[in-house]
Image 1 (cartoon, helix red, strand yellow):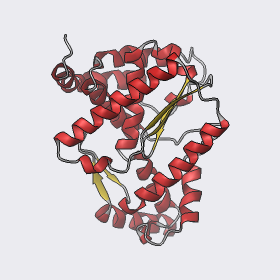
Image 2 (cartoon, rainbow, N blue to C red):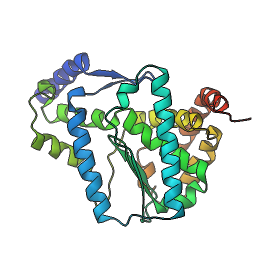
Image 3 (cartoon, rainbow, N blue to C red):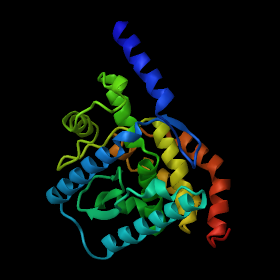
Image 4 (cartoon, one colour):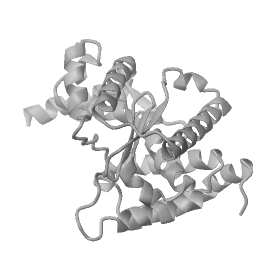
Length: 268
């Protein structure tokens, strides 16, 4: 009880001074802003290590990954500029790579470092399907979900009351590596369902702003679900909302996304 009381007080204090509002969804979350630069530095180091330990694919498919990634990036920049918050993206160092791996997976680390695995390409099927995936993953970074999870971990480990000011690089590195154990054996940070749903909503809007039909998100997620064939779900889906909930949420968010899509020149 004493531990729970302590953690509860730490969370309450942090919530008062470190509450961040997502400009696209309006959701408020616990994020310690002073950690962003440290988190980005750790992310870059982890990403570079992953590239060293992986086979980076070149050629037509890799070119498509970079094309879609840059269109999603440009869409994010356009949106943030439209609301006067371009500065929010100043620390991003975008990079998009295709990695040879049979895992059905993709991810974006804090600061804009993206990896797509060849194992997911048969499910994305085409450029628009790839935009669903990359829009979703980029949204995790834009929403600061990594900071949110690490801030939560800090509270759980007793660092919360320091508000990030007293935590050392070594301590943060330990927390970061526990949250992002990325390497040759990839096991991604486990986002919560609220964060996954938020990434769905943001990703839908970003792909639409980039000129991709957001309605294609539904058949993509249906293909993802079918890929499990009744067996254990791919890591990509392990903490995501149930298929029915996801489709219902996407349908609810589609009208707004379609406005962006039509403004970008899309039809239908």
